[in-house]
Image (cartoon, rainbow, N blue to C red; front, side, top):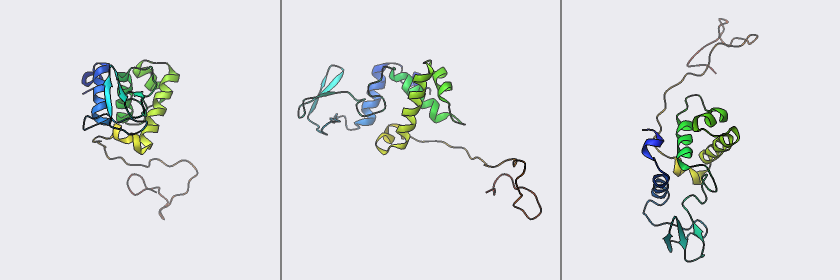
Length: 156
């Protein structure tokens, strides 16, 4: 099911992020780690450090002006791209300019490498098998004694 169908509104995206980030339902302050918090309109309030925060603080979605639906669509497209996805192609798919597409792609890749952000992207991943190798370039020496280049499984 596409991201826009599962999460059609901004409020649905916020609710999904809250469920993933705070599974027990109690918001935790990203600044001091306290559970002494309360909801305050569209944000949460920490009574220990007296700061306001939202669910996006400390994530790749923090301080973005891009709607969360486009972020989730970009994540979906990046994870499902068979041969990778360029920033320009991503910008065309989510209908933003190329600089925004580049920043979104960079942030998603950064989140994939950082352990504290992986839980937002962690789900069941389905992968197909692939064979690496192919036709050798001109001028390379064959590794087989018969002078042929191996292809498919078993290549170096």
